[in-house]
Amino acid sequence: MLEIDRLDAWYGPSHVLHGLSLDVRQGEILALVGRNGAGKTTTMKAVMGLIPKVAGSVRFLGQDLLGRPAHARFPLGLAYVPEDRRIVPGLSVRENLKLGLLRASAAIKEGPAIAEIAETFPRLAERLDQTAVTMSGGEQQMLAIARAMIARPKLILLDEPSEGIMPVLVEEMGRLFLALRERGVTLLLVEQNVEWALNLADRAVIIDQGAVVHESSAAALRADTEIQDRYCAV
Ligand SMILES: Nc1ncnc2c1ncn2[C@@H]1O[C@H](COP(=O)(O)OP(=O)(O)OP(=O)(O)O)[C@@H](O)[C@H]1O
Image 1: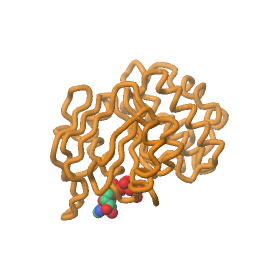
Image 2: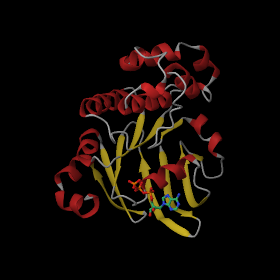
Image 3: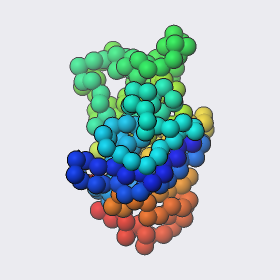
């Protein structure tokens, strides 16, 4: 579904991805793990068109992405939930959700998108008119995920969604991700919480120093504590 082939990326003179190749398959949850600074966020940003200097190939559903500006990638069915969430603090929950509809098709915009998303996220349904800044970090993360989902993407890239969130919400988020997969949505999940991610994921890829060093089923990596210690220990 998403094919990343020999991807290189730079921040100015600093060369941070080195020929990185990985595939995300339709309908799976793929966990992307590795130490701080390994290149996980950069990989997601490169897919979304947020790194100015890249080389290699990234294809989504057979279409070339690197030749398109960032704004032309979302309508292909991609969504991105960045680590800092990008919630607009002064807007209400409803207004933040509407931002997710800006790039949606006319059919979705005119349909009951907010009501539908509220059904999936009861915590948000209770707070639609509350200002986003008054919500907990976990609730804001849920809002960021809901906003990404509202345009019904086929693939969602999630950057450390469990970070700094209380355990009860992390569990709720895990159930949500499995339900999304049931609905046919594909997820690329970058996580520092390796144990949680491997319990949810179908497959796992480890990145180290800007390249893929391990690829297996999530279950195989869960059982391989030596590789986990070598590449994922903080
Ligand atoms: N804006 C930037 N300018 C220069 N270097 C950067 C920038 N952002 C990241 N880097 C560097 O690029 C490398 C990869 O960083 P990246 O954020 O992709 O790693 P990561 O695996 O997502 O780690 P983390 O879990 O810390 O976010 C690191 O060496 C980092 O210092």
